[in-house]
Amino acid sequence: MVMVRKLKVLWHAFWSCYHRLLYDSCLDRQMRQQLLKKVEYHEDSIRYIDAA
Image (cartoon, rainbow, N blue to C red; front, side, top):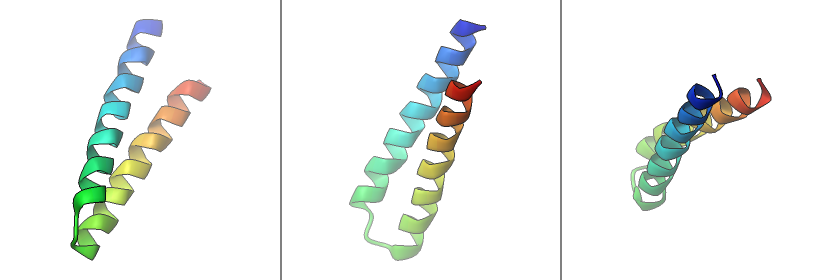
């Protein structure tokens, strides 16, 4: 179970960083908003996994 939890954290951390990089380089306002929502989703998922 610990291994699965670590893999989930790594998965969400990877996608959070990926979407953050896209967010930082994006010029379109609507796309930035969508990317920020994805970043927040993955960061919230990490917090939820760590709290469990």
